[in-house]
Length: 358
Image (cartoon, rainbow, N blue to C red; front, side):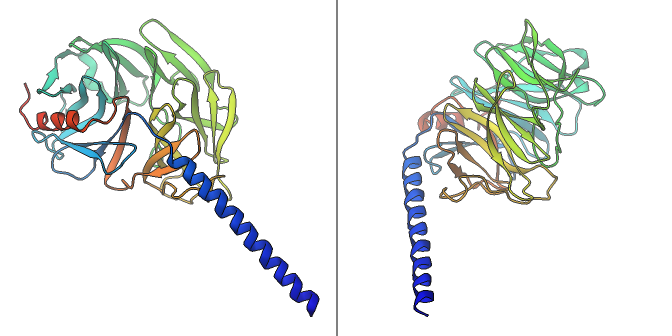
């Protein structure tokens, strides 16, 4: 009896010691991650509003935000997509939901909202604008073909307007995974061009106005889905459906490390919406429609909070920490701008959004 009693005491002591050590490690991890600061501004778009509306949020303090409400447009009639915030203002695409008309590139600055006049090709009605990419002097447009049997296109226009010119007619903007469950294959801005899927074969390529260059073939292992940057300009996040895991590769397709592997039957997947030097803006999704089984990664129990399914948040690439934004069913993530949060400047944009188009 004495021996059994002593064994129980030892077991209890060991369990308490393990718990105490874990608590110390978790507290240290959280203290360390709380010191991290992020540059730029997070951009989202409200899902259920009368007027199309964006949110500009401070990544270091979610309570600091500015809403931009486009009061001259209506969600039921006007399709507003792809907001891009740069130093001179906010660009976005405007089309009509139920009308066949060319897309409009809109520009909002501190003084006004105006349309950039573009001369589109005659076949522009055969495509949807999937996303725009703003550079110093130009804007790239990723055009998704309405006919799934033909390649998609990349076009370029000057920021000042003019003729829209074709950059590449051989890209694939469609998802290689279940598009009802997750997002992959959205072109990624890189230097003076884009990284995207090739139409010819399962591969990743770089395209700009001068060349089209294959970077590496897919899959890498069983990872077929290009999610976006892991570290911007350096490494990409790829995802595998079966088995379910995420890897980080360089621009030659060489595996650097595994970032996530789902335990048991987990179906978690990360959709990437933007990056800064030390973090990713992501949304937690599933690789199989809405049949979601949460996965647990290596740091799951050390974090103060994890990003829950269908919610968005920040993933810190230097620590592995997660900071949920609690946007589920309210706001869709759209990007992480390189413009630092500036309430006075963003308020001026918000005021301009209420004026008529010039």
